[in-house]
Image (cartoon, rainbow, N blue to C red; front, side, top):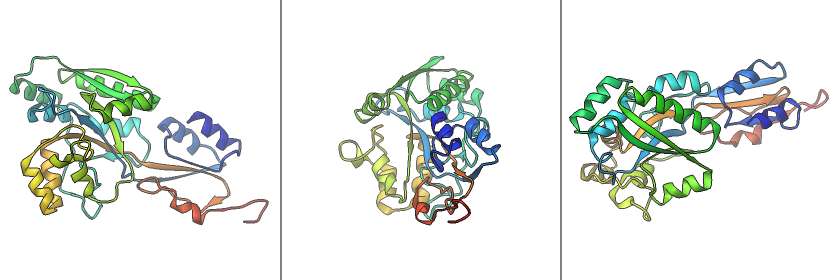
Length: 276
């Protein structure tokens, strides 16, 4: 990201979008020759869980994980503007969204109580896989520190993107962090959580199986589907990361969009030597 920012500042590029850590966004916001466009994000970051794991298959443990994460603090201090805590893959304003869902609050002592109720010996040790991207490692370290207060020891294992994603596709994980990008329709709930979508048929990599959810999916009852998922937590929802666009002075017509698409490129105009 630093190299791309330097290219923007040296007029080698005119538009930057996405993959900008908050400190670079803050820096660019102070530069007179750069304009910043911000929008709320719709790309959904989450913790994926291997529900074949004897510990993670227990709903109380999954609920404890949700209560062990201070999502609001991460959103406020470590993410770009426009970010917000997430509740479901599709955001509340989507036609199949569910505005009735609320983020799990940070309650580490309650999380510890849930783990004890589940019969888990503390500290609970879990392996978290992530990519070697510096921002992802920073977020993983924050999750690790927050979960420690709940009696959870998170062991971080980072790999290059190819190795990391290959492990996720093959089911070689206990917990992992990823983001769904550019999701437009509620069909994603079938592909990610339905019993019939366990690989290679779909993307249910955690092997989640829930007869009640399967029935709701067949009925296409999206409020009930998202409520069930929010209760059972086959994923731990984290945040919708905000969208930030940095433009060189004189570039007009491009704005940050919910999913970070580049559709506005068709509208872009650039002033050069007093003309468009």
